[in-house]
Image: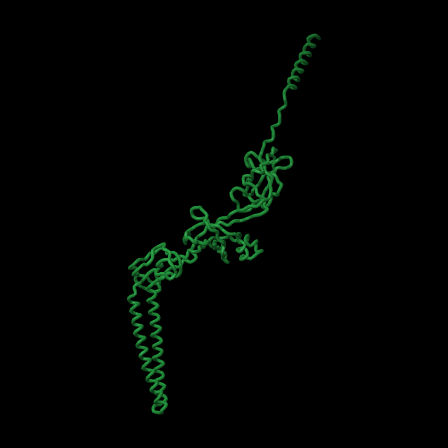
Length: 380
């Protein structure tokens, strides 16, 4: 190759190289994507009112099974099911014929015994006079006194039999032992009633006040007593008024009060029976109904966060903290076991002033993501 051709190749290569460099220099470098805008809140303390609901069985203040104390056929039913009755009101009448006959017989026996006593008294008085005049022996006089004592004993027994016969007659009129409402009446006129019958004649429920029975676990009781720091009686006295949720989901209009907690933990259920009392002036609540006792729990000066700000890994709850560089960092927390379905009370892991993510948790937000925080504290 001659020198002229060589120079031409060199010039061409230089032109191509400069053109390539110029072309590369003219392209724009790729820009970094902006940090995503993510809603956050600044954690603060506040007060929370939570409710815990316990299934309950409702019973009257007194549910009294009405059973006859004597055997007899029912001759009249004086009340109907669901009727309000007063204490002492007649409910049933049993056949009285045999019991009236027993009373008449006992009265006759009393009269016979009274006559025998009168006769024995006359004899004793006469014997005493003769004994004092030394006409009869002391032995004969003592025999008359013994006969009198025997007659008096027989009179006492006759009177006792009369009382028993009258009591049995009175038992044929079955009355209400208290104010209340009549339950079902399985036996009607003509049915045989007896003290050993399987079903009671009816049940009278005193519904002026009703009791809602439910259960508290051993853990619940420990929480009430602050792990034994106070007595159970003190804990019950300090408990707030409770509500009763009825079977239709509505709350009963009157508040109640926890009255007693059983002193024994059931080995099968691990719970203790609790009784809450509710006034029932209108008689709306009936024994045998079901419902739920609602117990309020008030927590003051606690950290409260939305439940949507949390995610779970192996039954542990986490939140995304936002650090000073606006990077997210997963952090474990502990929460109060009772919640309202919307918020958690944080018992460990967060403090006032911490910033946490409340949007995209578990989806778009990941550990170590740089974000542009949008504070939603006022709208949480």
